[in-house]
Amino acid sequence: KITRGEWNGPFLGLAMNLLICHVRSASASPLGWRHTCAVSGSQSRTKQGILKMSTAYWVVIACGGLAILYGLYASRSVLGASAGNEKMQEIAGAIQEGAAAYLNRQYMTIGVVGVVVGLAIWALLGVLPAVGFVIGAVLSGVAGYIGMYVSVRANVRTADAARTGGLQPALTVAFKSGAVTGMLVVGLGLLGVAGYYLILRDIYNPAEATGLRHILEALVALGFGASLISIFARLGGG
Image (cartoon, rainbow, N blue to C red; front, side):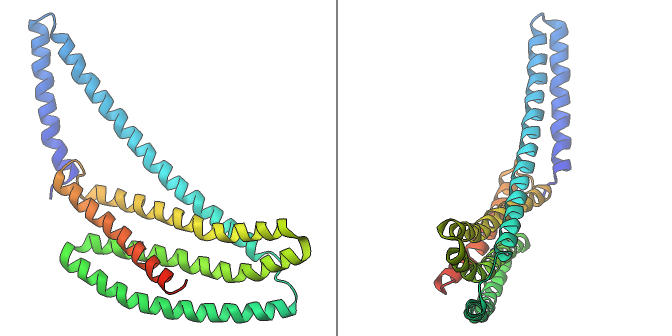
């Protein structure tokens, strides 16, 4: 494994040799200055490209953070709405109790399968792909659990909003309830992929074929972990 610093050393040495050669050619030929300017322009474009990439990473992370913040805002708004009369709350409480028991049992089963798959990925591909698998699975599970928690509590609030205010308030509560899961999936996905990529980029060199392959393996494992949990949740009726 070659770190970024070890890779930059020979590269910078080669770049300095090229610059020296171009300076010598510039002194010997009236056209040599063009070669020197070409090298300087290439280095400037490289720095601009690195700066744009760094800016893009932070934009992605900021978008993920905003999505999570909106999901939290929507969940607080939904849970802050009226839950109806005593009879409605009694029925809703029974639904919530059943949903919680089902979800806990389902996640226990999924957890056993996830541990087996994670150990297999660790044995076949290494530690970092296994870590990526765990990150994806945990983030997907968190999004699903919070989404189910809010959804079973939004049902009675949507019904009460329709009973007391009509169609528009009911649609507002229902839309915000659905946005919680959607925003959490997008936000946690962006933060998970972008954050783990930044970590992997400091471990491997993406400019090399071997380093890029290791990075892609870890990111694919992250996506596989998230997809595995969501597939189990859908098959189980979640």
